[in-house]
Length: 242
Image (cartoon, rainbow, N blue to C red; front, side):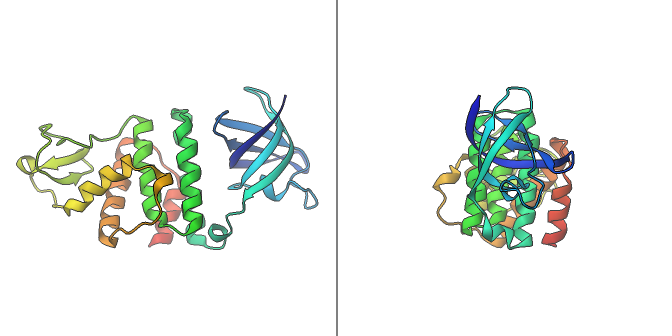
């Protein structure tokens, strides 16, 4: 059955002499494995559109639960701004790998929507760290390990939330404080906003650098402790960031 699908290439691997197998994330069909015959050849009209991290429209002979066959592929957005900046490419590589791993555990259609929207917002010039953290906190819900956004992790009180503790697993209220470092109240507010905001509605991002760093550090520690995901692209992103 010939189908036209929009998708983002998650992985590619060589196949025979001049072909490749690509895995793409789509909204309606989830992840699809596709044989792209001859696409590895320099003369192939499908070469660029079948490279990893490409956002394109694919005409395929779709086979459910089997490898589909590529007929043609056309770039939807070349992501020129991202591809011209190694810093942004590092963010794209990370959120692509993260999205692939999350989708394996939760085949929810809004994963595709949130991911593609975040990529396009980064391409438009919006803050890649904030958009990445927004995806990360939304993905925690898909992974089943999202911390409670309203209660103290110790006493379950919804009042006087004072700080965050990644090792303990979430928010801490004033009564349960031990040796935790207090955070700016904006950190608590922004963590909640990151989860609830519709990425499509974001027109501009203005978050204080210290607030961003605090949130990012919290999410890094939380991911390491509770998700079991260890991504090479994350380690590379950290090295670039430093």
